[in-house]
Each structure stands twice: as structure tokens, then as C-alpha cells.
Length: 171
Image (cartoon, rainbow, N blue to C red; front, side, top):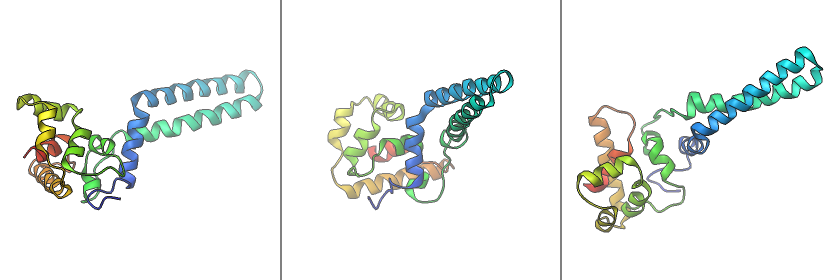
């Protein structure tokens, strides 16, 4: 467990789960639930109830995670004042538990996101140049996250977006 960011926190786990389910998973769960519910209604009206109840249970079993993803996991608001509570879902899903948190590893985890690519393209740099300029010292990543938090506070947002972290690493 890294003392800087608790990547095993509930919010970090929910962010990774949200990314794993995704919009496609939500649509599949909702479609299966809808088909199972329709089949349960048809069997309940025109046939035997012993087929309707398992289909209704399947519909409920698929609707619950779909609703959970849609209402909570897909938006996952910032909670708390610690770093894991303020980091955006994009950052939390890219930083894995147990990985070394130094500027180079954080940049390599975040560099494929469009906000990091925006910085690289507009500064006329490449990812390799940025990677070589960053240190391997874990203490300097603390400064980058502090800058990212200050940028988020300046822009009056509770969430530290990936672009703020990229800016903190590049400063």
C-alpha cells in the first residue's frame, strides 16, 4: 500500500470496476434483464409460473448491477479530502495497486489518455522525451500531486482530473 495514494480504497476499487463494466457491459446487462423480464411476463401470463420466477430472478440479477453502474459507478463523484478521494476515475483506473508511484511510472500510466496527449502535442513533445525528463524519485511525485490539487482548487473543482496531474508532472 502506497502512503501517498490509497489505491486499495473503496473509491479506487469502484473506479476500476466502473471501467471494467463500462457502457457496453451496462447495455448487455440491461438487454439481458429486459429480455428475461419480458420472457417472465410472457411465461407468467401464458404458461406456467415455475418458469416465470427464475426468469424474473435473472432479470433482477442483471438489473441491479446495471442500475448500480448507471447511477453510481459511471459518475463516481469525488469524496473526501485525501488524494484517492479527489482523483478522477480516469487517474484511479490507470494507477494500479502495488505499482511504484514515481513520475516516470505515473506518466507512462497516464500518457495514453487524451488530456496527457493534449499537453504533449501542444508543447510539441513526444512521450519519449517527457519520459526521459522525469525522475525516478518517488518524493517528486508528491510535489506533482500537490500541484495538481492546487490547480483543481484554483479552478474550483473537487475532482483532480488527469490533465491537472499531467500538468503537475510536467512542471
